[in-house]
Image (cartoon, rainbow, N blue to C red; front, side, top):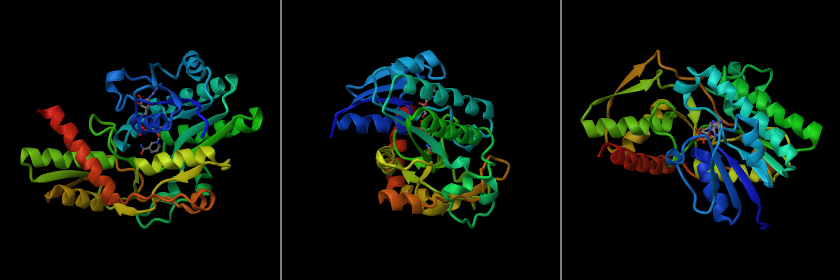
Length: 325
Ligand code: NAD
């Protein structure tokens, strides 16, 4: 395999951190850029060029893209439902990151550009029932995505398409469905359901509480993809001839109540569940239709939810213990 110089935007974050570690492991030169101070990065890979910069700024994007072959844009101001429902303007401002990175990548004559989109682009009307029909790529239109965050993702997908059509820039776009695993956000308000549930159960166990709060009625259905499957999928999509945005997610469906019971099983505890019906809970049902990615790449998630959640629980337990000791 030829060795490349690769920019990972958002390398201090969850998915970006794992991607940098993987690319370094394959021997590539990696420039990892994130706006957070380095001591807040989830992973700092040895041998990578680690840069703190705000990629909303076009000058920072030109510097970041200078001399690189490939660009992976994993940078966004985002979080779980609690964050995106209350920070729509902030989420939409991430449009500056992808737009300026596209301009800079094109100017620097980068060979390839990857953009991390989301299942939040899908039309809300297709997600009203818990009893879901899995979302196909065509279900993003007519457009009625998640307010704020989803509109930004849908717009940025189209920017990638137009840079490909108008300037010949090689762009690839994946729509991630709930990614989880170690070395990601687990507290502070931006965490997503799998990490939040692990943290709540670890905390309740530690403090001797007998009850826990669940956002919504818990009947919402979702699928969750383990980080290792996600990284393989990203690399496969970047190498592919898939021009249109494509689903990258698990199709192992569960309810939020089911996920809570699974984590209780891992922890060896059982709590009384209090459902907070006024908390943000997102759409009622969502699953990934993987027909296209199976057809093009033969990709399917390999890690079962129970195995991935066990690893995630153990990692969060370690982080919780470090923080509270
Ligand atoms: P994350 O929050 O852990 O990582 C994003 C990183 O981007 C953070 O470290 C953040 O500091 C950085 N960032 C934000 N603004 C920046 C800026 N102006 N300049 C430079 N860096 C900036 O999130 P993640 O889970 O790793 O998500 C990565 C990408 O995947 C995002 O685009 C996200 O929207 C998308 N995505 C993630 C999921 C998921 O379940 N994790 C689902 C769908 C889509």
